[in-house]
Amino acid sequence: MRIAVSSNGPDLESAVDPRFGRCAYLLFVDTDTLEFEAVPNPNLTAGGGAGIGTAQMVVDRGAEAVLTGNVGPNAFGVLNQAGVAVYTGITGTVRQAVENFMAGGMNAASTPTVGGHFGMRAPAGGPAGTTPGPAPYSPGAGMGPGGSMPGPGPFYLGPGMGPGRGRGGGRGRRGCGGGGGWRW
View 1 (tube, rainbow, N blue to C red):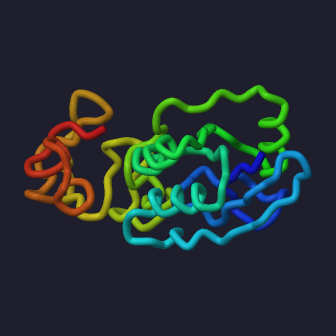
View 2 (cartoon, helix red, strand yellow):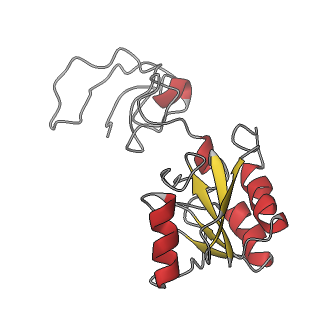
View 3 (cartoon, one colour):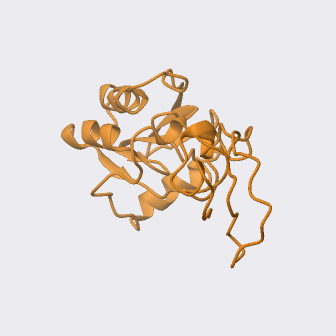
């Protein structure tokens, strides 16, 4: 059986890439012999449609299953329509993933595991305001000066957050910009 594994590198000892559409490599592995072909993913830096393009590459190269960390809705749709089984939540090295697959302890995913454009997000730790934080209300660049009054709890900022200066430079939710209030 020929399977495709999203990978961070070009060999079986590389880590499984948690992204499918924007993985660095796809390793096409023959499960009987462990012979493989490492293919750099041309969709890694695509402006859009990376999941669809990567899924189509898997279909065109004859893989019957995909092992990956996550898969978005567009890629999942292409793979599902082509009859390619998708296994998600995969971690470790490519070799470990293939061995676990061959042992038969995996269940195919029945739905996408992430929303669209998952792989486009920059990794945590980027410049403030350009990278989503770990929580939905993490501050970014553009936060106003903030209030100086202590509030009734640890998250109260008081008045004076500054008009239109919510999270990410004006895209904040009510309470994170335009007059102060609660911030998570």
